[in-house]
Image 1 (cartoon, rainbow, N blue to C red):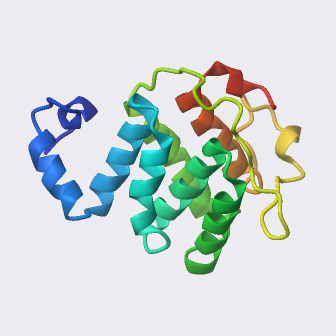
Image 2: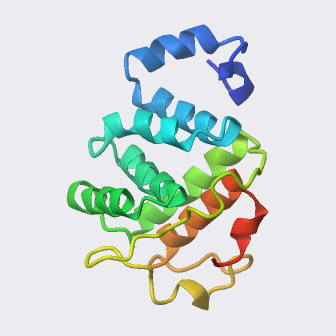
Length: 173
């Protein structure tokens, strides 16, 4: 029905139908709304709160929830989300997760996020007993080498944060 993200923004031609779907908890609609909230309104807290209802039930929601918590700097919630993802869906180093990460970045690019550095100092990847920053994370060139499966989620989190938060996220903190 709606092929252009502008159609679901406030004032868009499909917004009223979109809001009805959002109110009944349609998982796909919730995912689009959280990308809208995160990228256009810079409201990661609202995006994470809205997304939480689908964790750990939905695979894409659970992964996205973990990634957005990395952007917020909440490494405890990010770690919990990634652990739930592993328990209910798949390990983080799978080819399936690699494809999901690529899709998340692609979908976010639809919204043409305006980089504002709102959360630039909050990025924190979990580093606990279960979820750790991959040893190989900085062995890859983030511009030309599309990473290995072991560090794909790490770099997707950094790329999503950079897309939402601004160019200062390009370099390691």
